[in-house]
Every structure is written in structure tokens, then in C-alpha cells.
Image (tube, rainbow, N blue to C red; front, side, top):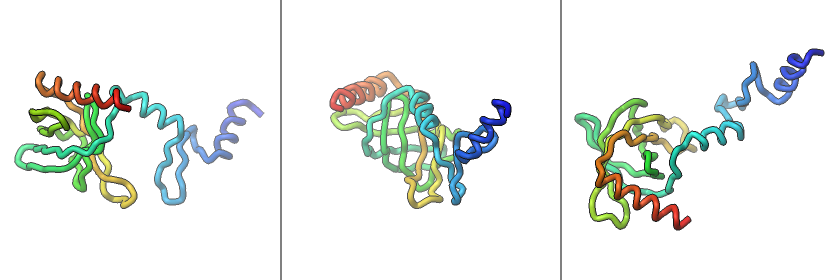
Length: 150
């Protein structure tokens, strides 16, 4: 038996098809492999601080108030039952504990979780694409302080 055929047989025994490392259970939801989770963590440029902060955001004519689940220098996860489409640009305003001023920034929805599964918190991952210097300094100080406390 050739090496290539042997690898395919081993992969089928382990539940993978066509070279995929992800297995699909009976309910057709993907299960991330340990390797995939490690890759996702490596992609993150900044450490995240788990914190609930009220965040106000607008996209043109709509204005919404929701809560973050975590925040970093580069973005945040906003918990919301109505996540915006990926690629949506929004104006964000929030304040961090201990700061006298609000933080204002512009963000873009990079990914979202729809509320279709009651076991998963719906929301959207926001990347900060524009932030003024004052807001950036406030956010950086907050992140720095909270990373030291861990």
C-alpha cells in the first residue's frame, strides 16, 4: 500500500474526509480541532480583557446600545441579538472604568454569530479601524492596567 493511500485510510478512520481536520457531528455543526483553535489564537494581535461595558454604536440612521463581552486595543466583541452584516462600518462610543472621557472610534464588523443557536451568545467581532489620539491613550492605559492585574 502506498503512503498516500495509507494516510487517506487513517483520516477516514478518524472521521475526516478529503484531507479535512474538522469532523462534523450528527447535528452538522463543525467542531474545531485543537490545531484550528491554536491558529485562531495566533491570529489575534492583542490580548483581550473580558469585561462588560455599555457600548453605543451607529450605522448611518440607526443607533443601538449593547454590551461588550471583551475588549482589546484592536477591537471588541459586542453581545447583541441583532448582529450587523460582516463589513458594516460603525461609529462606536463607550467609556472604560476609571476614565473621565468617553472613547470614540470607528469600527468594522469582521465576523458575527447569529442568534440561531440558543446555546451560543450572539454578537459581532469589531475591529477598530480609526480612533483619535486621546481615545487611543485612554484605551491603551485601561488595557495595560488590566493586563497587569491578571
